[in-house]
Length: 577
Image 1 (cartoon, helix red, strand yellow):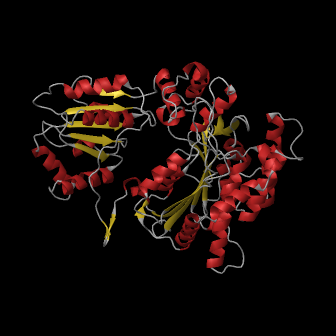
Image 2 (cartoon, one colour):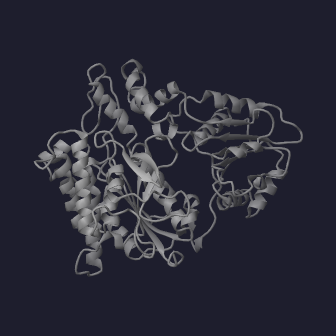
Image 3 (spheres, rainbow, N blue to C red):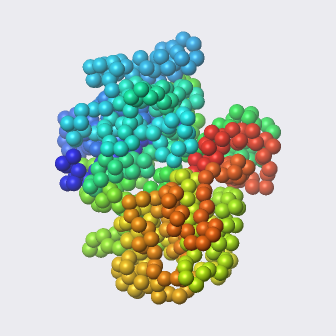
């Protein structure tokens, strides 16, 4: 793609989990497009696909991404299509007779086929587009394979070819069905690829906000590109998810009285913890905190919490009204204006490959960043006693005079490796810091992040500016420092080249790459982090639900439902938390 090296990428992420609330991102995007029209004195409202290089969505957001990017609908046409779909399939007089999933699925497929015929000239149009149009907006939806729901990464259904891990060239309606294949909507959809048929479901459980997936995908597709702007659209804040003893909480919160709340309602609250997209938003806001005009998040804060299909049918103006009111809030209004400026004239602020290791901007240009501190674990950290006991025993033992302590936590993404390491370090701090003299965090995602973090350590310690200076400093410090290499997953480089050449000090590594465990020094120097124990996974889920009432035991009431959900999430810490 010849333009990748000279343009700043413009990315659009659209949340799922919205149902009728899925209209809100379209309304927010219409406001952005209308302001672009006014600012550029355009005769008509511009089409969103002309202002974004890539659009990614999950759930209803995946459907919206298809309407805007693959079918190239103008924004008002997409809004009308979404409204028509809701009434033809889910609510209103046009809803198919019979409430069974098969009739709704048939009506949904027919509707998408009609849109394809209208916009593309063929009912059974395929997702993949002509590769010769290098400037076409690229679109993907997040899905999951029904037989592998706890996979660390979603299965993407794309409109473009990739060099590896290719998507099946499915039909547009198949991709749309996969986007909404969630309990309460549709059953899994079968998609065939080269004689192999697999069942796809909505990727929204644990991945309602696909912004991080979008950034990773952009790095794969535009490896030499620069990031200009990321616009992330939500479907409205969820209600507060909590359980209380008397059920007296009011407002938008979802509080439940023990012994009086229907089990189905409690289970909805448990499911809701897996659909909260704001956690991802907060992580990205922190990541881009020094770049205020790169990341823009818009998500209606009030009024959307109770929006159901029945509420949509009774009051179809509710979502537009709440969205319009949100857009009038002064801070939101200013951010929309800033997003318009960024979309019209995106700046090449940072390499897309370096997004996960953003340096801090300083006067005169972007230079280094301060040395990283090891963060504390999440407040709801639960269990993992086996791994923590092994870490304590290993780093407490007297080491050989000829080698360092090197311990490796390995396992799939989302299993909780980093949190275990952070918990261990936090325990060491709480003990008065007597075990380690220095705690040093290094992002080991790639060579660039390792060298940047070690270089920052050298600057902090006054030892120089390069990673070599840092390694030399550590080699001369005959103290009990701990060097924590986090996310050392890439097998393309030799991690040991970035370890101090000395016989003192301690090294802790987290990795998805099983072969890295060979770097462990001595016996019991590696631990395979996988699923949580089921009872620990249930404890974690109940902690998240019961923050307001930590003394109340809810196990007898929620055991069955919590057990069911943690099994669906594969007992993976990231999916639960």
